[in-house]
Length: 504
Image (cartoon, rainbow, N blue to C red; front, top):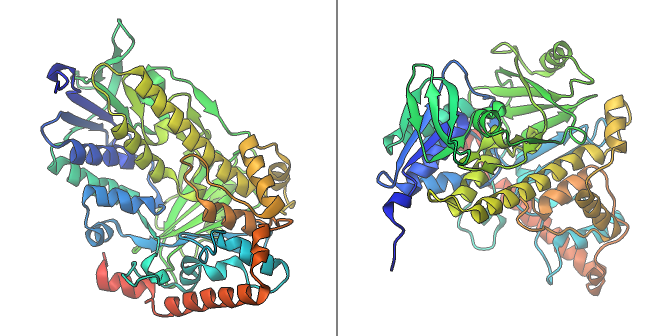
């Protein structure tokens, strides 16, 4: 067996930028490659700071923590975490209406047909309650209850799908300790120049403000919106998506919690854009994502302050971006991870997941010094499919609305949308069908939650549902709902659970 020659092996990885993207990348590489494979060096600057507000995540984050072998209770204590069972959307369909996008599934499939088709038949006749009543996560979230999955056979309590709310700055710090313990070298300082190789245009080295020159074989750009390497040095190009997703600003301000903290994120639609509420153990993260075309920074800060449940704990922190992606996430010997790769606004809490999935793709296609173009192309193809599917899912929230009370909502309701999204909507409108395609992130539950929640009513349902008589369908639906209600009643309040297991 012929091992690749050691001189072909990547010997130096340089990560530019700390924050969650940099330290998630460093931690994973340190864990998977071990101390002896290559040198890993991360450069960060206290002067530059990071884009860090309270972060909400999706359930894939648990897998990330498991890969690192992180103790969940320890991680939660050190990052002021709470649990998350879904997202509540208020005022999106119309003012005064709300729905939950829960994690996990609705009901249970029957006779190889998706559960929601049986529900749809009865719901259309007014013989079944809303779909949320058949989701353990939605019912528990609204009551403020939480427990981790327990080994209980086919009880819904065996299948609880959850994520976290945490302080992103503390998470980065937590992973920094993890990484440096496993051999990652941290360099404090500012990059003032990037040297390219004249032979092939690859990045050769980074020049620091103090004159130090840092060479590398593989460079990972976690420098945030600036994209210092991927864009600044390599001029990769950017695909702008703001004609579909016009929100290009955010303002964030934390405050103290007034009431019992429930295990879900809340997104409330405003006359333009939306506000978030992310509950942590020590505070509430609040923010307003808005389009600068319709709302000034001053107006945004005022709207946010007015909606907060208590006095702000800090001054307003403003962010600005252009929604879209780099034309390539991997260009030459540089891979952009996190905000440097692109940004599809935080509506469905996909930011950290995209970091995680970029790292997973990098590991799957990990290069040697030869940098095979087929590997790079595969990475870029997978990345663009994933980002486009997430983009389309987020556009869905804006497009499908009954609101016409402002210029912003009239624009969203009437805008043209990508073909893929239009086909998804048309398929659901006809007979309630939903298919997950390729490796798209959001599953049938997610698409159903938002399409139903925003008011799309299918004309029909799967015809094979009629093979079961209505009395039997009703009996099964009532049984599923009863099992969920009974299960939720056994769950403690989230605050009790946290106090017992992972209080900061």
